[in-house]
Image (cartoon, rainbow, N blue to C red; front, side, top):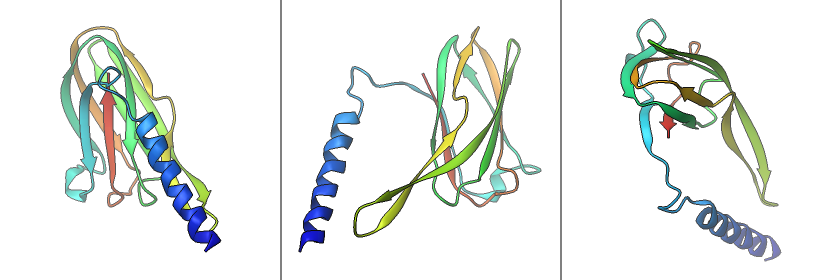
Length: 141
């Protein structure tokens, strides 16, 4: 019975924290770019590439990974007046509930960029051979 109460309290805490930490409309950020890589056919010679327009400003990469996502995700952005490259490393953080253990996953690396001018960028994403591990990549303003 005690374990059930602890599990219920843990669920309530997660829900409350989620509601508190969820951005409000006032602090919402604009999604500039998104791709969900989950199909090997999306890659050409092991790398995904696409072009998109971006305005001058500061942006941040966000990811939705899981334990099957690539251990290293190399991302490069190239444009007329801008260049960026980073090897993001997948890290798992264990969480114990008293009943079970689960992991949350995040990519660690320099995720903030400063684009100096409006321009077209090419994004190159290299999963280093893990073409089946799903991951979503976002660039937000």
